[in-house]
Image 1 (cartoon, rainbow, N blue to C red):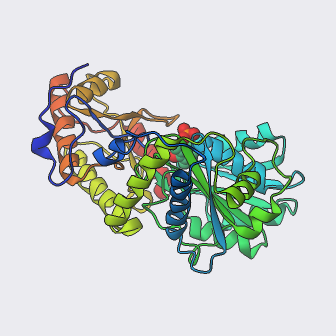
Image 2: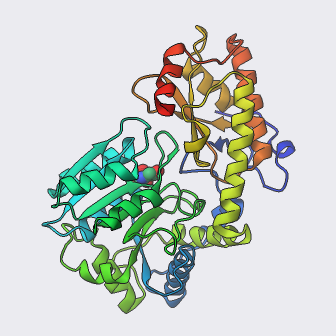
Length: 401
Ligand SMILES: *Cc1c(COP(=O)(O)O)cnc(C)c1O
């Protein structure tokens, strides 16, 4: 499908995607900088010193984002998508006789529970439904009730609703009860601080194609070295063994199996751009502006967000579908795409919704155009207000209550 849009007029400072290429308002893969794509135009030998230096730089730069001045942590990149790394983390750090408390409030929390099932290791689940945050006091109560629990896994930003979960509060509860915390920070790391001096955890995972704005192909585990040491022999899987990957990388500087060389080269360029943008703080501030401009404009059209301001992340925002009888999501999607914007379907079970991502190579000027495109698309559908149905607002009231 050809997209007839004059992208260049609307972006100030940021290069637009190539002509005909829409912005991806999705939580990864996402719109990347031209320099990131360009970095892939060269082949690298995986054993060669140049590529080993790139791997070392990548690990060092990622570690620096955690504030680990004492050198207590290390970074282990792993081939595959984010879920491969979540599985690698759970399988490597949870001993075979351990037990995990999974905190779920959306698809990714439930996926962590499903992973435990595949691993055949003990777990228990707190499922808060579509979007309510797991709170410190309920974590503490669950840990008191079950002394067999050794680890807790929390989702930093639950990308299915866009909720920013209270990891600091959860961490305090976990360590007050003498247990260990693992964090899925896939869609938050790089834009929302997860400083080891502020929030205690043993290990976290993220991937190349989220807030660092690389292309998909690998993820990474950042873990306490003592945990990496102790993980020897835990893993159920050869390819997903974080200890083995770490030990080999420490010894040879290489990945154990074929690395995604081009993706690594692109990611290094993305990390340099991230640094030039003032790191986590600058990246987070741009995403927050993207969210604020986009949400304010969408509200003017009558759209309502699922979450109240307190839980709204700068990563992705869930909107209720309008109640208007002429609103059809698939048509809205096509009209938005024709204007150069790919949006994301919702994942709520009770009411219809859709999502708009705030991450990727775009700024508030682009977000204003997203709002204009949404208004124009509604007019083309004959929808004069985007106000949600009563049932949606009743759902939301439960959040406040
Ligand atoms: C993206 C994401 C994942 C990983 O998904 P993949 O499709 O395997 O990359 C895991 N957890 C969260 C919270 C995510 O946003």
